[in-house]
Length: 167
Image (cartoon, rainbow, N blue to C red; front, side, top):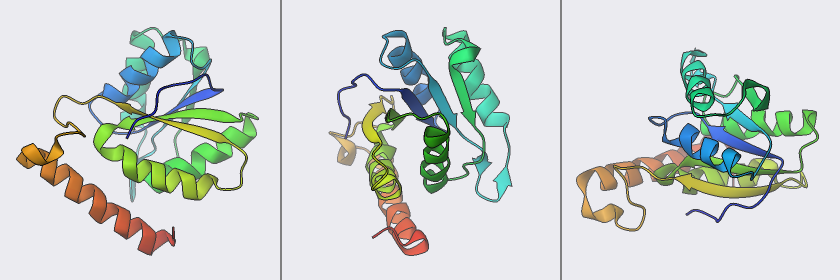
């Protein structure tokens, strides 16, 4: 699931991937869809670290996003954390809209979680998937890797519903 990008206050890049998320956010930034890029990545659950976030910020800068346009959110350690902490940053900066960028295989779960966490906030979210060379959302069932990613995402989605009560 991926929406056509529209102008927004900020682009939120969910941590993870092999650089495709940051590069897609950079492309959207350079096309003028938003004046800021928020990078949401505080490491893995129970293993906080800014190492990956720093690498992703480096990719953004190398690709032409000025440091002054990058807003680091370094607390999130899960997709749920991405939603919770980016929402806090959105309110802090008085942003009313965002383009949420993640990998194509991760977008359905991201969309579900963000919609639950942002419900009633008045913040408009647009979901835009970064293309990945190893996963095709239209033909996922044709490869073993496609099956693995898809099943893993649904298992995680059920876990998030149970753990965080996102019904």
